[in-house]
Image (cartoon, rainbow, N blue to C red; front, side, top):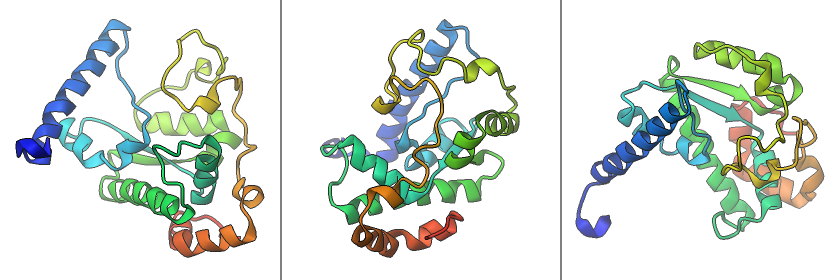
Length: 202
């Protein structure tokens, strides 16, 4: 696209409109009223979504302790898609989180923040609260048979396959997974962001 000399917003709008149309067609085909896209890149592309959807959308940011996010990145070993050096992974995570937070702060009527820790400790209560904000009702089926394949395989985190229920086992996993030296390095890179999110640095 750069070689064509087109401004980024121009070609992103063209691809974006086609992407949105495909989601709309799939939504109608399946008898649904709304579609959702759970993709980390949405946080850094949120202003494009804001423009393309003419603000007619709800942005739900799942906030999680940044150290736990990096511990999860370490586990899945996506070294071709993600940085391999700890400090670069921290910078990657910081960019995504800060972009999402800035949008939420600037657009409170179109966004909300859901805590990962709240979701795993009280799935129903947390979902009821978030769904109410976007005008939807909770249905117990949302939490039933989470590991079932009746909907087919999607593009979700591969670790979700085989899990039949929500678990809080990965809360504060960073305290188990990282060495004291790594924790010090993470504090140096992400300490301010951790505090901004309201998490304990200890």
